[in-house]
Image 1 (cartoon, rainbow, N blue to C red):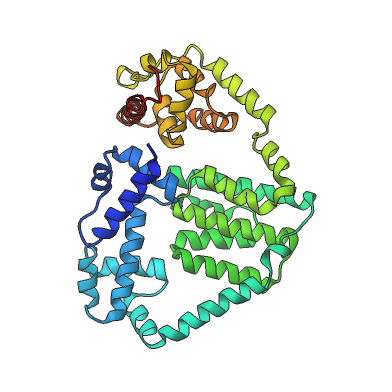
Image 2 (cartoon, one colour):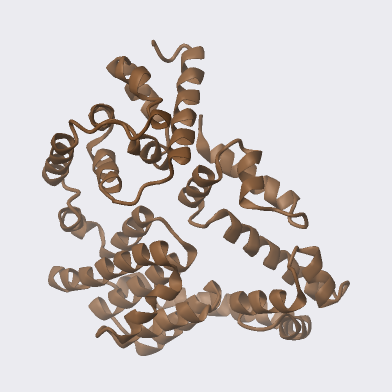
Length: 373
């Protein structure tokens, strides 16, 4: 079972029903997942929450209709399920930086000129050979790692307590550009405008080497935090700007080298070997996974996405967790250990739903003759 197919199915459903009442529960029910599991699955594959994705599509469709002049602004707001014209205008301005009326007036008269300016701006950015200017020494990259760490910390904080919780970071001693970026994030500047503004500051400063690397990390990190990108994806994305020659240093920095991974996994298994399953509702995997042979277990785990697997085994016993960790790649096992070590856990109902999803996949593979149970 490939979970990307469920995400694609959801996207198609959203596209076909933008003008109807859509909720997280409705979308989850459409692909037969619990709301919690569906939210995390969609976020993993798209980098956006389901309802954020719906809002973006509705605003883009509304923007196109504003240019057609067929409907009044209040009619457009109602069509795309906004409760009031004021609410539509506030949301529209947060994403586009201007009100619907200003957008209609500006784009209706100068649409072709704007498209030309956008193409020219992109051409200029490419001509500046941004990546060539990112080259810097290993020592400079080590200093820039502190910014990467800070961005990952802010991302976790935003997920736990919301974007407004980052406001106190404005008063922490750090680069002015970082403070400016956080302030604009809190102010609700829409993503495209936020990227453009921050990139303009960077390009006009003529930065190179470490200074450019730091600014690119901040821009991409802040945008990812705004969009709710999973920290695993954020870490990989930001790490790529350090270049292939720094790959080993990145791995060691995050404890992803083979030695660190193995130590972390073994420590977790020993610490949790006597752990009991969380509740009767969360014990659905104990018997079937406990008696499954190694080949079948490896085959099953290849079909389970990381988010589902983490949720499912969070409620399992230490014995089952150890068996799973020993039958996946060391890199994936290290990722799971990091997630399993986090104190906050999903509700029992969500663990049960994830475990049922895993069992459904197991039965499907058994019926296909891929598993021997």
